[in-house]
Amino acid sequence: MIRFAGIIKGKLHHPYIYVIVKNYCLYIGETQKHPVSRWGQHLMPVGTFLQRLKEVDEDIWLRDEEIIFFCVDCEQITTLSIEEHKLITRYVEHKVHEKCILNLPMLKPIEKIISDTTRTAPARCRYLWVDDLASKVFDEIIMQLKRLA
Image (spheres, rainbow, N blue to C red):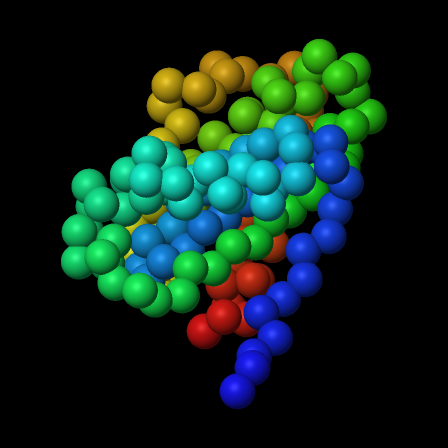
């Protein structure tokens, strides 16, 4: 038997916010390259996703069950200078983290956010539209999680 697992498309060099889900745990990250390359790093034994998952729940870490990946292309950020892309994407990532933590019941079946932006988050952003972008990314995450339920 076979099962179609999905299609991922996007530009190689673009700002993305991505999500990794395993069981009740959700990991949020950002990258400036196609998310597939970053996801591969997360699945290595020293990858941040697997390390955090093991710290949070070793039983889930050990189980061979589905891991779900999805991403949001933050194309609006590309209107800025290339030097600003990473900083602004990190700001969006942090705002999405905050929204997920504050609205955790909306993320069912997710019960735990296992990623952390406290060390990498910019303190502020000079572009007013970026908070709206973060809200749209959060809304997309909610919509995709509902589709999985």
